[in-house]
Image (cartoon, rainbow, N blue to C red):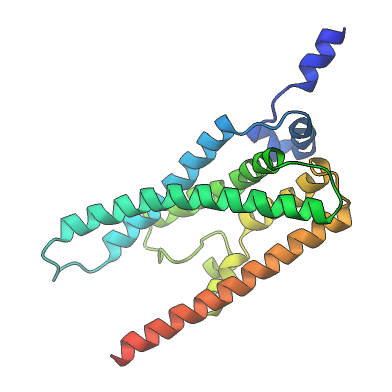
Length: 226
């Protein structure tokens, strides 16, 4: 009887279970954080989505006057893969650190390993969105800069509003909702503290998108003037 209970306690959280029974997965994560196998799966989805976007961008770029067009396209593909891997790892580490800080501020109890596990599992949802977006854009004539699962995939807009609308992505919001639940279950903080932290993160992402969109608009105007 005791052996069965111990086996149940050390059962690993499941990525697919995160979609159907997220609360149960976070309870398991609190007992036994896991991330190696989920990390590989999420990495594959994220890099595949980035690769398809980078290849579509390279194919949609006018290279008729470029002498080394094929080399440029190959470089774009390589940048897509390498950039996707590095961006993915950095995003996970930063996210885990931010979640750890939120838990500490919320007077919860956790460590970086638990928060890294939470980061990997919740990023799984965002990675699905990246993969779907890359797949749709790759096999269509959609602008590669559009996030097809967000509001800027529905509402046509110029920068900086275009970038801001891109933040309102169904997979991003879903992922952040799971983060709020995970901070409660894994970090042991209150519902109010968890949602306050997540809402602040979302507002910051909107502000960063606004600044990025303004920068894009500025450089486009500058190039047009030249």
